Structure formats: structure tokens, C-alpha cells
Image (cartoon, rainbow, N blue to C red; front, side):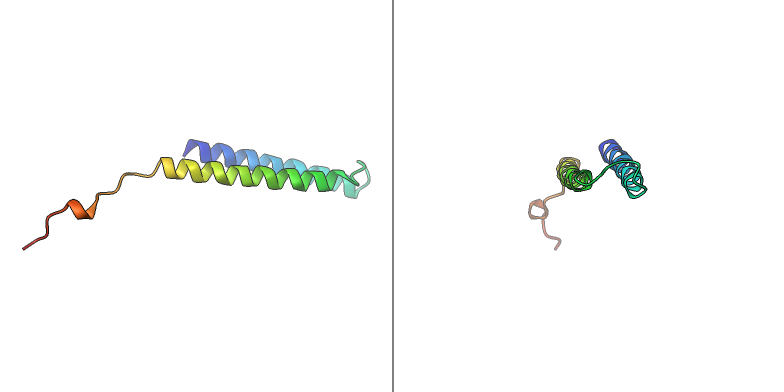
Length: 75
């Protein structure tokens, strides 16, 4: 669970940072002609990587199931 929280906080901070840069670009404080496209591509790569990491950790953290074939039938 700790890894999921770290990834969630990291992605939240990245989204906040990209939003601030976009707002500064809208107000023409920062020149962002090519910066916006790069930011969105970077964010998509980071989100995809985070999804894969969460998937891997959810599979590794899964509790073991009891195999039903090993149980004896009730008579």
C-alpha cells in the first residue's frame, strides 16, 4: 500500500506543476508553444508507468487463494 500512496502523491504533484506551468503560459508569462505538448507526452508516459507499477505490486501483494480442488467433498 505504501507504494500506491507514493505514486499517487507523485502524480498529484506532477499534475499540479504542469497546471501551474500551463496557467503561466496562458497569461504569457512563460513561452509554452512546444512546452505543452512535451508536458502532456511526459505526463502520459509517467501515468502509464505508474499504472504498470501499481498492477505489478497488486499482483505481488495478492493473498494466496485456497485451492478448491484439494478440499474433500462433503457427504
